[in-house]
Image (cartoon, rainbow, N blue to C red; front, side, top):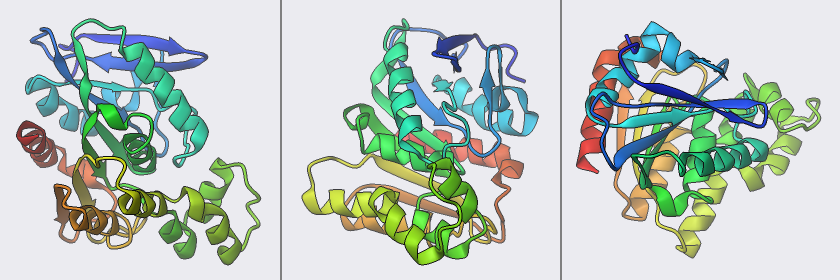
Length: 258
């Protein structure tokens, strides 16, 4: 499905990233920086979002609307850890050297655990470059993950802490790096401008609770008068990938208004 589009792969200190271009390649192509989720991969010439048909359905309408998409899934299943953020900053520096890309007005897009890294980079070092943010079934609240315990061990292990931590100790440890906590603190200081946001999430998500993740961040943003659109999928669980055609069009609509 994506064979007709130009792709390039970039090496990043034993990691790999890619850029896939729209067919109409011209100057100042708008760029989406994509953060992969659990089990994602980017290798030399391969990537889950470029290779898997159900994920390709999201990329195709975006490419056909004139956007380029780049991603690297740096450091693996990272759950928003600092090393992944730093590697993505390095990847972004590589993108600055590619002709035709507009890197001054980008969109970040995070899926599953990739949403935490996407959001933290959007309000971190990439903030001056980011205009739009998209979360798809996104992990945005570490407190929710820890309290519900289903993926507590994976979150703790990804950040190289003792997986035997009980819930209360884990909450104390992760509060300072929780995307929700960081966003609340940033909203009080008001030193940065939050990007426009679109949240796509099943309201019956069995893995990442809808109310405690996208709905919570959405409220913080709307309370600061930031444009934020919450798009709950009624009765849908974590598998938003099964709705690729409709959701790809929804993403394009959001991007074109930005």
